[in-house]
Image (cartoon, rainbow, N blue to C red):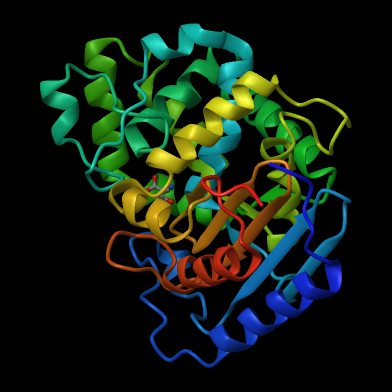
Length: 317
Ligand code: DON
């Protein structure tokens, strides 16, 4: 895409307007309640942060409040897993949209334990297992957290132990997925170890400003800024963006691509990370979810942001 011709004043106005419009919305979706600590989150929260190619951060709303990034963490583990295994990772996980809910087990049976893509829970558990490899779980988790802090250029990012513990105690469907895949040899570590690492990386807590910062490497061809420190290869960054566009919102991926037109990844904590290749890294958060488990207001806000800025991977400015 060409260099953006959107002034930072105009972008600031757009972001502020969207936050005000979202504050006035009465339909806010429903917070995830299958992970008990998430059920207690106030749904009347909203934040939007954009980091431009010049490194400017523009935010509105509750952009200093930390939230559970949940499935957005699957982007970071995919980047780490791809960096470690390269294309060998694709023998263990596919690259097709599933058209099913994020925790579905049905395809796994008739596709012999091979998950459709790295963003449904089964696929993300496989990616986590590939990172675990020969590490003990604590080391693998340390590796993931170090990588996320590097991506965000921020050491003040941590795992919420209550959320991790709660998912360990209630994640029966994920345990079913992991055990099922272990029986096919798709995962190789003891399922309880792989799940322990998976639940903990899903429990990373961040603000929208931190999450937008950690998405910069996908906006800038694998680097933290244009020409800046490299996190992954440009090829891998493009591959991850493609998967975010096609699979980042589960069975709402087509709708998100249609309405927003940008690669994005959602989590049941209500966060969405999105990328404007060459232009900006974005994060939006509002805890209430729509029927397919994506943030209701964050999806709407990103649709308005794309419309007003003209940002789209299908229409270079
Ligand atoms: O495995 C789970 O169910 C959660 N840790 C993550 C799910 C999630 O965020 C799906 N997102 N929309």
